Image (cartoon, rainbow, N blue to C red):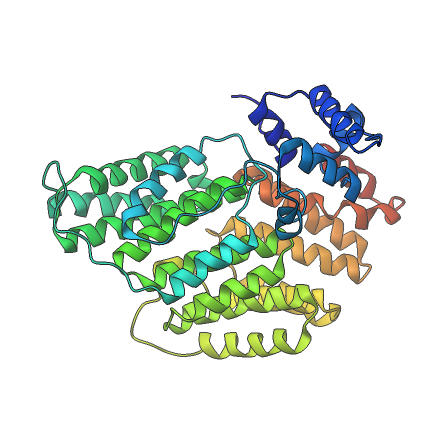
Length: 437
């Protein structure tokens, strides 16, 4: 497979068949039209495309002229997302569900690793979902009749695939994709009753969500977003409001992970309008608290943490929706601790993170790896360097073993905090691993 494209500028060049030297020439031509010198060379282009430097305003104006992008889009989308090749989600309609599923499957094979939906388009999609009522499926399409026995088997197999622990799921990703392709074909070409159609769409939503998380863990955020868009379309067609809310919260989690907590807060606000189960509300409130903490909004963070704890304590006879059935005291404790860590309450944070990590079931090793990284960060802030080294090493080993590059990246982001402690035993070796891992 070709090397992945990791920056929108490189993708914009590829769309036009330009080399870096060709782009330099285009910038020179644009600058000369204004009696200027562009000041750009191949080294500058390379730094921009490797996320090492952001072009200044003058250079961005020249880039916009070279790519024929309206100046209004520079302010609307910001660097580098105004560049050509930007993607927009489809309107939330039953007639677009199959197209969204096919687009998602193509995106899973795409080489772009940088792309995510813009805050503007993602906000519009969430607002559509919050205001929409699921459309009724037609009773039949062209093709063969889809009987209940086949759907029973598809659901049973799909449930097994989506319930796999992360360490096993990394080896079954192609099976999930193939299962999703089969379900998509049946939705598109089969004949079925409204009840059977809703079951197929609900299954497609579940499979697309799981497949999206696999891409997210691989750092392939555009593919993850396309799969989650398909999941949202499918959940909407099935009338499954709970799962739709879960997909919006996945988008919100991704936004916070990528450093856009304000987008996360807005997304979860829409998602909360569609859930009633206390476990689902607890998870959404906890994720919003994380975003508030990242924004430094103490009062909003504490308010959501209190509400999340209260919701999780509510007893109900109805099981939690599948997308949040794993949510429990371990998650509440650790993510509450991470909020306090962001807000500077290191001692309280450390106690909560340690408590939650101890409660986590062994099957959730990916989550354990993330929790261990939070714990290492709390040790670093407390200047307990030996413990930080031990916990970071454990987290790196775990993330490498389960095949989760996103988690490996999270661990590697700790490297700058270790550099002042190079003389402490174990730190030089750990820094070598973080640099080359």
